[in-house]
Amino acid sequence: MRSKINPEISSARLPRGHRIPHSDSVRISKVPAEHLPAERNSHSLVRNNPNRPLRIMKFGGTSVGNASCIQKVIEIIRAALTESDIVVVVSAMSGVTNKLIEAAVQSEAGNREAVACIFAEVRKQHEIAIHTLIHSDAKRNRISQQMNVLFQEGERLCEGTMLLQELTPRARDSISSLGERLSAPLVAAVLGENGVVSECIEATELIVTDSYHGGAEPWMDLTREACEARLHPVVQQGIVPVVTGFIGANEEGVLTTLGRGGSDYSATILGAALNADEVTIWTDVDGLLTADPRLVPDACLIPEISYREAAELAYFGAKVLHPKTLYPVMQRGIPLRIRNTFAQERPGTKITPEGSANGGEVTALTAISDAALIIIGGPGLVGVQDVLGRTFATTAAVRADVLLISQSSAQNDVCLVVPTTVAKRTVEALRHEFAHDLAHEKVEHITLDSTVAIVTVVGQKVRGTSGIVGRTFGALGRENIDVIAIAHGASACNISFVVAQKEMKAALVATHQEFQLGEAASSVLKAGTAEPATWYYESARATAEAD
Ligand code: ADP
Ligand code: ASP
Ligand code: MG
Image (cartoon, rainbow, N blue to C red; front, side, top):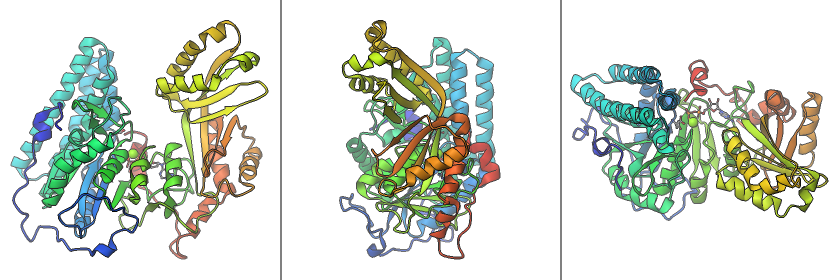
C-alpha cells in the first residue's frame, strides 16, 4: 500500500551505497537459536536468517533531540547489529511535535508570522543536526533537499488551514506528523554516514489504521501484510529500516496519527506484525520506575515487571509508555524492554508475561493529572431507565476514555472520570442524552470538575493482599489528603483514587513512602548493585514536558 502523502519522499530511498566497506562495517555474528527469548510464539514470518533475532528499537524524542543524542543512538544500533537484525522506530526530535501543533493552531487563528517563526525554529533544529552529523557536501545537500520538500508540504498545509480558518483533524495529523517524517530520514542518513546501510520508511506504508484522526487504531491483519511486503524484504537484505513513529495511514492511504506519545505504540505494532523477538523502548530514564521521577525524587528502577502491571501503569499515566503500548506484544508474548539511551550499560526494565517472582505487593504508582470528574446526579435518578447503559453509550460515541467510575446507591449519583481533553464534549453529549430527564428533574445535575487527578497503586498482589487499601488511605489521611472517589476490585492489580490536582504530588509521595518503594524496588537488585535510578535529567527536564 502506498501513502498519498508526499509520494516522492515515501518512495525515495536514501543512498544505500553498496555493501559497506569491510573496515567500516558492522560485524555480524550469529546467535544460536536456543538463545532466542523463550517467550516467543511460533507463528512467525519466515525470515531469511532465522538464527539472528529480530529486535525493534524505538528511540524517543529526547534520544534524537540533538546531534550528540543521535550519535549515541547510532552507537546503540551499531552495537545491537552485531547480534540481531534491527528495525528502528524514531520519534520527532524533542519539542518538535509540540511546535508543529502550535503552528497548526496558529494557522487556524490566522497568525501567519507566528507560523513562520515556528517553522524557522524547527528548520534550524534539523539543520544544526545535519551540519554536525553529515560531513560530505553531497550527502548534506541530498538530505537538506528531502527535508525542504517536507517543510514546503507543512507550510502548504498551514496555508490551507489559514485560508479555511479551520483546522481539520486530518490537517492537524498531517502537520503534527512532520516531526517523525523529518527525524527518520535524518537518522537513516546518519546511520549511512557511520557505515550502516539503512533506509527510511514512512509508517504510512506499514501501519494500516482506521480513520480516527488523532488516535487511530491499527488493523493488525492489514498491517502484517504491509509489513511482510515492504519491511520484511528490507530486513532480509541486511538493511536497517528507520521507520517513522507516531503515524499510520487508513486504507485509502490518508495519513493518521496514533495519539500523542504514539511512537511507543508504533514500535510494538511493528514488533507484533513482524513477530519480533524483542521490542526495546530507548528513552531518557533507566527504565520503568516506581513512580514518575519528576514527582517522586526517590523513585527506583523496577528490573522486571509483568505485562499486566506495566499496562496498568501505562494506561494510568506513566508517560514513559503510551497507554496502548503493551497490547500488541502481550498477545504474542514478545518481551518489551525499556532502556536509557544515555546510560547504555544499564540493564533497564524487562516487561514479561509473568513479571518478577520477587516483587512486593505494590510495585509502582502512577498518576493522571489532567483528569475531569463528571457527576450525573439527583434523587430522581433512581427512576431513570438504564442510566449506566446510556452514559457509556454516550461516552463511547464521543470516544471518551472512561478512566474510572463509581456509583452511590443512596443518592444514585454516578461519577466518572475522563481525560480533560475530552471533558467538555463528554458533558455536552451527556446533557444532550439526558435532556428530557434534566427537563423533568429526574436528573438534577450533570457537573464537571476539571481540577482532579487520579492516583493509581499497581501491584500483582494488590487484590489478594489484605491491608493494602487500608495502608493507602492511612497514609493519605496522615497527610490530610481527601479522597474524592475510589475504584478497586475490577482489576486484580490496581487501586485508583481521585484527589484534588493540587494534592496529587503529596499523595504520590505519601503512598510511595508507605510501601517503601524507594527501598523495595532496589532490594530486588543483587546486593551491591542497588542504586537510585538516574535519568538524563538536566537536558531531559527541559524536554520531558515538551515533545
Ligand atoms: P520519550 O521521549 O523517550 O518517548 P517520554 O518523555 O515520553 O520519553 O517518557 C519518558 C518520561 O516519562 C521520563 O522522563 C519520566 O519523566 C516520565 N515517567 C513518568 N512515569 C514514569 C515511570 N513510572 N517510570 C519512568 N519514567 C516515567
Ligand atoms: N512525536 C509524537 C509526540 O510527541 C510521538 C512520540 O513522541 O511518541 O507525541
Ligand atoms: Mg514518549
